[in-house]
Image (cartoon, rainbow, N blue to C red; front, top):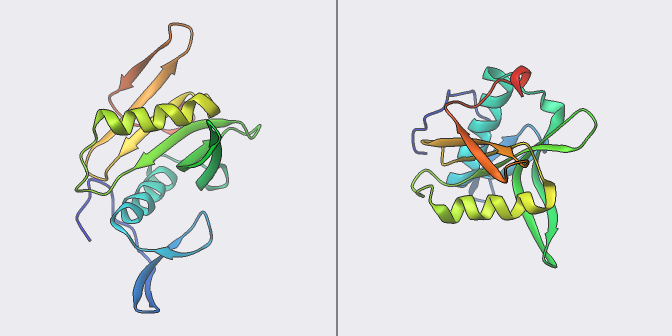
Length: 149
């Protein structure tokens, strides 16, 4: 897999039915190892180990209904009251983070109305804090530690 701009961690990768799978600590099962999944697993470990996000408040592949269609958020951080606090959207390392990606995550936010949005391709990461009073957002220099959310 491609090198990422994220700390490495001891991955659990095995071969099943001729395909590589990686263990997802949030879903507690092995999932297909795609370039996007490689980014997701590293980013989740980064949030838990470096930024101290509680593993119990993170979930992968969260379904939501948007304009009558079922969509999936890559990762959602919940608050202790189980309301969504952050949406994270991942792309493979070779996919550029474009306006299309921000539009995608913004559509998800029409349903969840979170405080933070993050997009990452494992090489570049962007984090914005929503400002609903002014109907805008602020790009942050860094992904905040959990205690600063």
